[in-house]
Structures are given as structure tokens and as C-alpha cells.
Amino acid sequence: MHILVCVKQVPDTTEIKIDPKTNTLDRSSAPTIINPYDAHAVEEAVKIKNKFGGKVSIISMGPPQAEKVIKKCIEMGADEGYLLSDRAFAGSDTLATSYILAMGIKKIIEKETIDLLFCGKQAIDGDTAQVGPGIASRLGIAQLTYVEKVKSLDLESNTIIVHRKIDNGYEVVESKLPCLITVEKDINDLSYSPLPSMIRAARYKSTVWGINDFKADMSQLGLKGSPTSVRRIFPPAKRSGGKLLKGNVDEMVKQLTDSLKEGIVRWQL
Image (cartoon, rainbow, N blue to C red; front, side, top):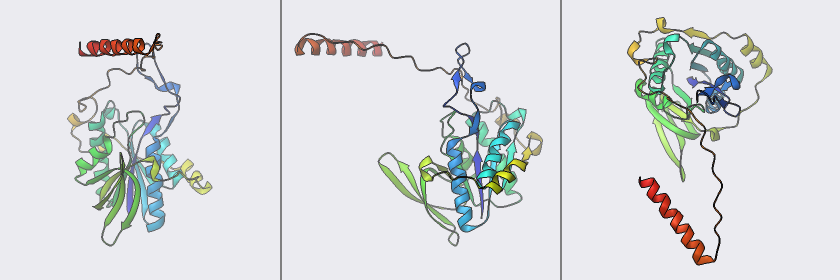
């Protein structure tokens, strides 16, 4: 069984700051880490590999230093990694990113079958949850999103059953393989990496592919292939102090209703 996991290198949002002059993320203010949702996707893939056999491959798009997250995945138990890195990919939004990753996945499929694809639910630096479904659409395979549990996997019938998280519980969904799954953090607990895997990860060199390795449509990647862009990032305005209501109950009710009416009028304007 061959499982492929899409991962992303992201800034640690617990430490990142916003540049007050440019209103953009100051990426130098925080270390980069593997996207937390993607880490749980890798953990689940390795868990399935250990149960059924086969191998786990990793694919990521980013600058050369993004190989760091692939090494982390090797440390977690993955077997091989592919890094899609080229200046032509810079500025890609979720639509262009899904195109580039799909191109890389198709190149892998040319040499070996992929039975199952995993992605994190979303990246913590974008929170769009669009790339995983975008990849599935481009590959023409089923997508199971917001998965919090893999209930069963039957290799004889080539089917998988998962619990898909919804607001008031979960849905039980069955799909034929191959399919793409985006996972919630609830799907598992991250385990500690054994020393042999840590040593292998330190020595591991990823396969790196650039634009010349694909028959890509240049109009679908980078800034040209991105119909959306982030114009400005800013922290929410600080809340002003509350207003203290005084008087008896009737007087305070009148003050409150007057304030609400004033707020509604401002909102309508």
C-alpha cells in the first residue's frame, strides 16, 4: 500500500508578529514548523502503514528550506519525500498551489500507484482548507474532509470508512480507494520518534523537482495563476471599555435599548 501525505512548512503562529508599517506577517519573528494538522496526517499515514504494510511518501511545495519539514516527516516514520521548489511557484494562492501539487502527484503516479492521500484539514497560516479538496478535484478522486477517525480500511474491497466531523457529531462515510482525506487534530496523538528514524532523517535528502520537471501550464501557477491575493493583514482593533449603566431598572433598560438602536442605525448606514 502506498500512502502520500501533503505537508506544508508554516511559521509558528504562537510566536509570529505583524509588521505595523507594512501590515504583513513578519515571518522572521517566528521559527518555521510543520503545519500541525499535517503532522497528524503523517502520524495517521504511518499508523496505517505499520498495520497494513507498504510505504509513506511525503510531498511539499516551498522554498529549499522547506526540506526541513520533509526531514521531520521522515523522523516520524515516512519513507521518502518530494519537494516542489522553484521561483516560478512563488506567490501561488490555493488554486495555483493545488495545481502544482497535483502536477507533482501525477509525476509520482507515473512510476507507482498511490492508494491513499492525506492532507491536514488546513494550514495555520492561511486557514482556507482549500488545497486538499483542490488536489482531489484536479486528480478526479473522492475527497473525505474533516476526518476525525479512520474507522476501517479494507484492502480486499478497496474501501475505507471514516468519521467526518460535523457541528453536532460526525458522519460515517465510505469511499473507494484511491481517495484524499483531510484530517482533524482529533484523529490521533502524535508519538515520539525513535532514535533510528531521527538519525535517518538527519541524513535524508529529498527528491527536488522544479518547473523544468513538469509539463506545466505557466498561466496556472505563481502570481499569474492566482486569482486571489492577500492585500493586507492586520490585528483586530482593541475593544474599547464598556459603558456602565446607571439608575433604576427602567432607566437602565431605556439606556440599553437606545444604545442598541443607535448601533443598528450605524450598521445600516
